[in-house]
Amino acid sequence: MTAETRAPFAPLGGRTPEEVFGGLATPCYILDEGQLRRNGEILAGVAERTGCRWLLAQKAFSNYDCYPVLAPFLAGTEASGLFEARLGFEEMPGKEVHVFCGAYRAQDFEELLRYAGHVVFNSPAQLAHFGPRARAAGKSLGLRINPECSTQEGHAIYDPCAPGSRLGTTRAQWDAHMTPELTALLDGLHFHTLCEQNSDALEITLGAVAEKFGDVLPRMKWLNMGGGHHVTRPDYDVPRLERCIRFAQAQWGVTVYLEPGEAWALNAGFLAARVLDLTENAGVKNAILDCSAACHMPDVIEMPYQPPVYGASVGTSIACPPGSSCACPTDAQCSSLHQYRLGGPSCLSGDLIGDYEFDHELRVGELVLFGDLAIYSTCKNNTFNGMPLPQIWRRSEDGTLEQLTAFGYRDFKYRLGR
Image 1 (tube, rainbow, N blue to C red):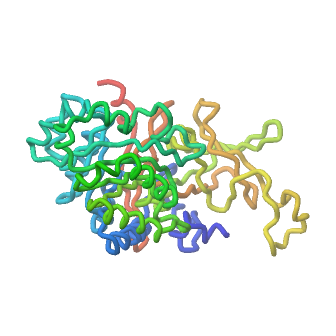
Image 2 (image 1 turned 45 degrees about the vertical axis):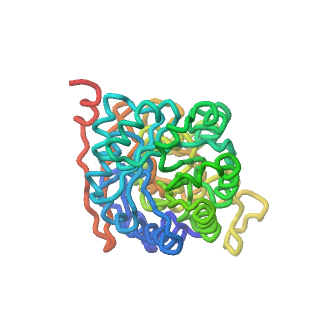
């Protein structure tokens, strides 16, 4: 698959990064409204066919200037605390606001109730402490459950069902602490166990939910199946997802909510950077860019995650593509490919984005475009090492570019003091 047709770069429409973004100062993020709309249309189709209700998990994508594009496809937003709840309330007016937090702070809770219509608690103790106040305010209450069903490999940091997890109420905890009075406060249950997964993992998890909490669910009005559903990925099994939704609706008579974050903004953003320097050490060619993994794409280090690069492939041993004009043996690394380790300019030796194979030698000043960086980037970036925050641009569906931010020294300084 060529750089022009890979999903993360399809929004370029066959033009090169230099042609589309060459006039922008780097590093910078670009959010693509056309791809956001295409993602929204896929999710809306599921809602139309099943009657489920979609929420936007703002922890993954919270660039509110783009909310008007997604709003027609959404029932509302999902928040992880006070500030996200307020953002969803203010920037998507008239929509539902759901909030879940591992533990709520007493000093925040009254203000939180101004914004959130659905409040989900992590434990019976939090439900007992805050639930009566939220119920008196007319809110719909839920409890996060832990079905103790892990379907992830290699992402333990993102596995809420890992042994000893602090997230969600297990059936043993339910039996020990949920009194009839507490159960009567509830309108729904919530589970979130997936991370960038297909619907087969949801099907497995739903079976565990039925086994552990199937006797409780008929008393509920809604079931929130959380996030981690990669619905807009090309290989996602949408029919299986719809079967899962219909099963829950028929089995327990509940309204089904789903709250993905990535699915809304998958492949809908870029990070543009330029090569500052090229060095070589022990046979490794390093390209030092003006963007940073640690500061501008933290998931590269935390997940770990290696974003796609336009015109390059991930890996260190890529054979000549079938039908190419290269004369290299097909079982050997192609000598026409040039391998570089891309890294940032910070003092952190581990500020590395990864190893990539290019079909040409990089040059100082060249534009390097990373794909699929609308998610977990602008909402997680930081100014470690005094690194400037990249500007954020919006690309409209007619190709117009609009600058949304004007970050500078003040944004670095005023996070640290007066």
